[in-house]
Length: 357
Ligand SMILES: *Cc1c(COP(=O)(O)O)cnc(C)c1O
Image: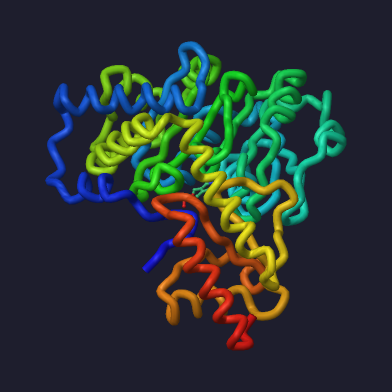
């Protein structure tokens, strides 16, 4: 079985071997040290600014998206949400549920956000902007420098969901003046799902400490306070945090964040080159490195996903909602090689020879 989905993805042998060990007790100085080192690496790889902090949430990344909406905004805010697919839609729903006023910029699937369109919202009293940097459902990578400049001009609190773009596409949190960066364990970190990470700028830490959030578990003030000593308020997913630690050190050993981004970029480029002559249309106008969404010109996208799984032992990712029959996605993250790409492309060619593509 080869897994080309966008999470959970394939883990390296080293990370798998950490997962095979007994899970230790965690209220110890040894575990605290690991957590502090995890924070240090995450701040370094996200290029966070002075006095930024990172916390490790035991939940999937949607939990962190919700924690950010709950801990950073109130009914007094007016947010601008970029909605280009299922993950943008998720931020919209979170604003609805928590009754945070918002306006959404809805984009057609696969389309990027132009500067002209963004600046239609200039000077209109917004207080924050939420974006999924790689809208993983359509593989669109938004321009964080353009968004950052807009946020600075309008004094907006800038939230970047980098769940699938962290370590896959270049991102400089300090340079684009983002206040929040969110990522998760099962995307480019290539660990099991269960941990999500929130990086907070100095300004975000201040905001979280000023606001009173009505939640015991999703309380970032409490998380920040505990992380000062490398701990969490409640039992975290200890085993996954140890795997993340091994993975962050692995990335460091292999040349750091730039090298990892380059590795994912080359994996994507190799795949896109190899499928050029197949009857697929590329969906994204501004392709992110983590994933390639494709529209098969003949055949049903969901049936292709099922066939690859059942007849070839290859997992690719289906899309949800109204994209289900039209688009499937091939991931480039996790422990995959260019040789794996060739195996997948050969399976596509076989389907084509069988008249199924
Ligand atoms: C994967 C992903 C998430 C989080 O999904 P979970 O299932 O909650 O882990 C959020 N945003 C983006 C852009 C993603 O790719």
